[in-house]
Image (cartoon, rainbow, N blue to C red; front, side):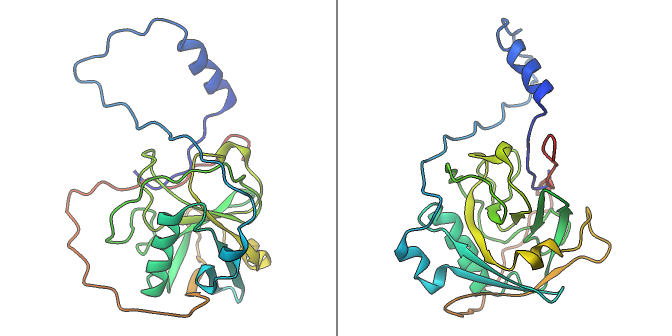
Length: 233
C-alpha cells in the first residue's frame, strides 16, 4: 500500500456503527488479520514551549523549486521520535531534490519519498505513532503512513486548510511559521505533471552529515499507499 490519509465518509461510518450492534458471524479460517487499532491521542499544547521554539535544531527550512522558502517549527515536545527522524534525515541531505509527489488542492501537499511515487522511504525502520490532540489547522505538518498506525518513515504532508477528520490519527511534527504562500504554489496533481521539489532542507543549526550505506531493500517489500482525500475534502 502507498502512504495514505484515511477517512471514512459519514454514511459509511453510520453503516459501520449500525452493523457493530449486531452479533458478528464467526470469522472465516482464512480471514485477513485485523488492522492495528488507532492509539489514543495524547494531550499536547497547540503552541510549542519556549525551550522548543528557541532551539534552532527545531527550525526546519525548505527551499522549494517554485522559488519559495518554507520555515517549519518542529515539535519534539509532541512527537520526539518522529521529529528526531526528520532531523536525522535532514542532516543527511535526504530530502534535497525530493518531490512533492501528491498534492490535492484544499487538502494537503505530500512529499518525502525519494522515489517520487509514494512507495518509498528511508532505510531506517518505521516509527511508532505519536498521536496527539493538536488540531489539524492550515500549515500543520504531519507524518504520512499506511493503515498501520506504526508505519511512518520519511514521508510527511503539509495542510492547505483545517481538517477535523485527521485529528488524533496522524503524528503532528510541526507547523509552518512562514512561507505558506510558497506551499500554496506547490504544483498540484497525483502525481503533478511538473512536480515541485525540495531544493534543500536544512535545520537552524545547519548541520549536514553523510548517511551510512543503505541496507538492501527486500524484493518482496510491500508498497505503501498514497493519501486519499477525506470526505468533503
